[in-house]
Image 1 (cartoon, rainbow, N blue to C red):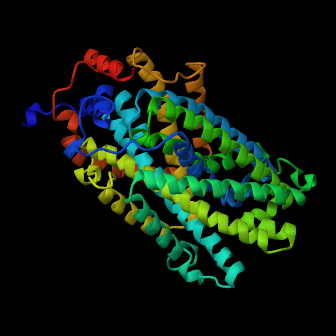
Image 2: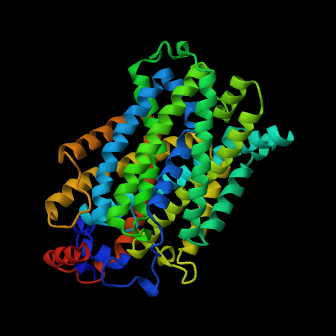
Image 3: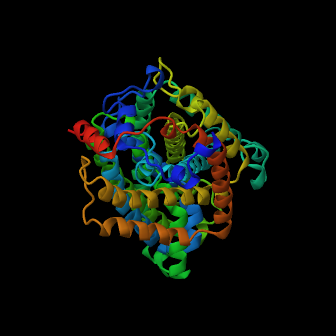
Length: 495
C-alpha cells in the first residue's frame, strides 16, 4: 500500500472540481451525505443583516478603546484604509461567491483554486478568525451588561466573575452565558437564527444612530487637533487591529449554501453590508472623537455609553445605549459562531476533519453536534483569555483569508474562464492585486507576538492535516471527473 501512496506535494496541491462543490451543495445533481443537506431559506435582507450584524458589533462597540490610543484622531484614516482594503476584497468575494455558491467561504474557494493543503490552512485561519472573534465579542458583552445592570438596578457582577484570569478575574461568566444562548438558538435552525438576527440588527443601527445624534451635541472640532499626534505609523498599527471588525464580509459567504438564488443574492448582500458598515463606522468614530479627548479612550470600559453619559449628564442615553449594545453584541457572537460551524461543516464533508462535523440533523437541518463542539471551545476562550490577545489573532486570520480570496479570483479566471459568474471583479486584474497589497500592508502592522501565536496555530493545523486530513480526504478516495466535464457540469448548473 505504501508504494502506491502519492507524493505529499501532489496530495497537497490536488484541487476539488467546482462541479463537485456545486453537486454537494444541491446546486446541481447529487445529494448530501446521509440524504440531509443545509436548507436554502435565507433571503437578501436577512443575508445582508448577517454581514452588518457580524461586522458592526464586532468592532465599533469596543474597538475605539484600543485603536484611538494607537493613532489619536487619525484613527479616522485607519477606518478609511480598512474600508478600502475591505471594499477591494469584497469585490473579489463577490466574484467567487457568485461562481461557487457553497458553504465554506474562502476555504471552499481555496480548495477549488489553490489545492487541498492550502485549503486546509485557510480553513484553520477561518476557524481561528471566527472562534476568536466570537470569544472577543463575548468578552466585551460582559462590560456592557455590567453597565446596563448598574445603571438600571445598581448591581454589578464582581470583577472575579466578569473578567478572564489575565485581566485580574477568575472567569468571565457573562461570556459563558452568552455563548450558551447562541448555541441554543443556532441548533434550532438557520432561518430562525437569521430572523432573530435581523431584528437585533435593526436595534443595533438605531442605537448607533442615537449615539451619533447625542454625541453631536457635545462635538468640539478642537478635539481633532493635532490630527496625527502619533504619526502615520500609528494609522497603520490601528488599522491592522481594526481589520478584524470587517469579519462580517466573510460571514456572508459562509452562508452561500443556505441562501436563495445565491449567485445574485450573495454579491448584493456583500456590497450592501459593506456600504452600511463603512458609513456607520465613520459616523460613530468621528462623533466620538469630537465628544471626548482622544487620550480618554485608553482603558475605557463600555466607552461609547460613557461618552453619552458625559455629554448629556444624564443616565438615560447611556442606559439605552448599553441595552442596545447588549442586544447588538449578542447578534455578533451569534453570527461568528454560525460562520465557524459552516466552515467545520464543509471541512468535515470533505473528509479533512472527522465526519461528526458534517452531520446535519434531519429535523432542524443544522449541524447540531458541530455547533455544540464549537460553542464549548468558544466558551473556554471567552471565559479565560483576555480581550486584547483575541482581537489581534482575529485580524491575522481575517487578513490571510482575504488575501487567499484575492489570489483565488486570479487563479479561477485563468484555469476556468468559462465558469458562469454572476459577478465579475471590475478593473481586473488590478483590483485583486490592490486587494492583496492592502492585506499585506495591514499584516505588516501586527505585533510580532501575534505572528508567533499564529505560527503555532498553523503548525498545529499542519500536524492535523498530515496525520488525519490527507488520509481521510474524500477527494483522494474516488476517481475525479475530467476538467472538461467539471466545467461543463458547472456551466449547466449556472444557467
